[in-house]
Amino acid sequence: MSEPQVGQMLPDIALTMPDGGTVRPADFLGRKLVLFFYPKDDTPGCTTENLDFTALAEDFATAGTALLGISKDPPARHAKFIAKHGLTAPLASDAEAGGLSDALGIWAEKVNYGRTYMGMVRTTLLVGADGRIARVWSKVKVKGHAAEVLEAARAL
View 1 (spheres, helix red, strand yellow):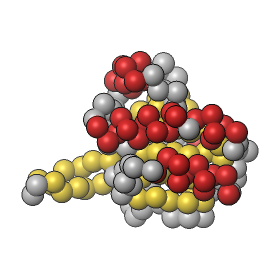
View 2 (cartoon, rainbow, N blue to C red):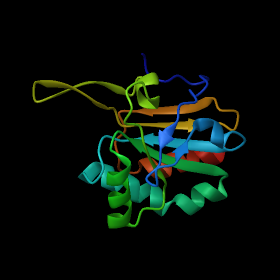
View 3 (tube, one colour):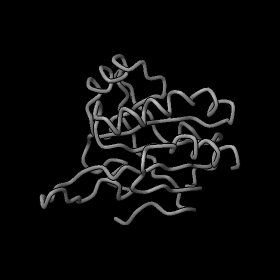
């Protein structure tokens, strides 16, 4: 699948929360949503990204925008990551084959030091209240990213 496109409806695929419950994109219809897809819990870039979104969580809420961080890590690993770093931006697991990141083309072939493997392409989606993708940031650089997304959410 190709990368997500502006104007595309977000597929309504269930994700698993750390408590074992599920969440779906349709649960957020009627309000804006930021989905930030990241490779792996408790790695330097991913920790920084999650801490940055957590630091701005109240500002996103004031802007009428929900946050949801997504990786392929299992729910129990998310729970440990949240507790270790005091994260308040909710995290969901997209570990199932054919999940949301697969459907959006964010789970993709990557190459690192000549090794080819499947991995999460660090991507952020800003979704409008109608469930359509309003903005896509692909191959995200973490520094300053959460603040940039907040400004876009405020403008939407």
